[in-house]
Image (cartoon, rainbow, N blue to C red):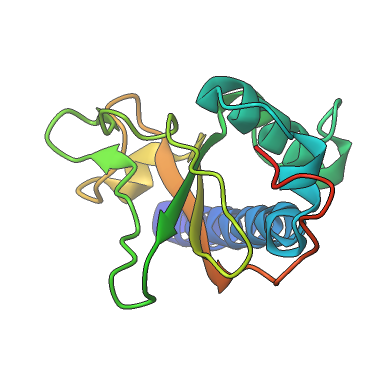
Length: 170
């Protein structure tokens, strides 16, 4: 009788922590997305066109230099970001970070940064591997081959018509 009760309790506690972690990921994405929305990020990175450098700067704005902003709930070093620009809201596509066939990251996810101009529609996605303490309790649920689960957050927005007189940015 104790084993089913303790298993159920473990699932409840682990799920609550996972939901809290996902909420923290959402908050971090919203804070970082706001810098794109207002044009601050683009202006701060004027002249930069390397996706790797821009994504690293965006990750720093999400996690901070010591990851204190996200309360240590997930490993910021494994955080992957994808920033895409779309012509319309309907044509915006949310990327798939997890390749279910291989149990690993989808090829190319976390390498795309498209610089947003004033009035552009942006699809900003963050994904992170989340280690589970009791991964055996989630048998049959899709995840990474190492037992981790995917936590993902996406924001879709139109950038403000910010001032570009001092340079367009990116």
